[in-house]
Image (cartoon, rainbow, N blue to C red; front, side, top):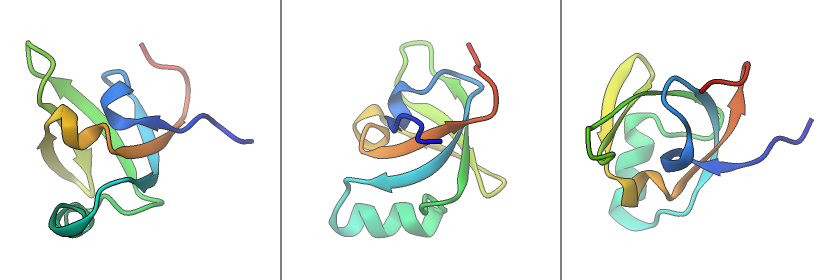
Length: 84
């Protein structure tokens, strides 16, 4: 039942994760929570830019792009089948 927690920056394109926590503090934490990056919510990795940074995520029916430094501090557990 226990799945591996991985940072969103490590999740492959097309995968779905359930947010399990974040290591962000201060104003950025509040902003991410307001955008829907709340533990328990599902996030989809939609696309990465050609150089790999930033990455577009779909959460709460909204597309949000995050830089690698931000997405590496948000953790989730993969849900569904294996995705490449």
